[in-house]
Length: 88
Image (cartoon, rainbow, N blue to C red):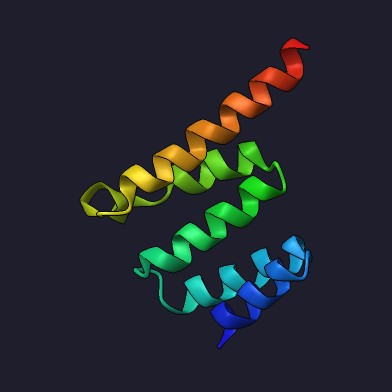
């Protein structure tokens, strides 16, 4: 299972590999909100803010999702962090 492999990769510190695995898993089941959030978290951990915004923009199913708030919080936290880097 690619999601489990992605979790193992993330736990071992290989976030790039984790993202790749999560994206493959999400491509196989594109309505899986948990996989969507795993991809988003892996992008955020790599500070791929622009990619994360684009990814969020294409996630039409989130409008009906119970995970929408969680994803918005991930996005907000990382955008605030990104902004602080440029202000210092």
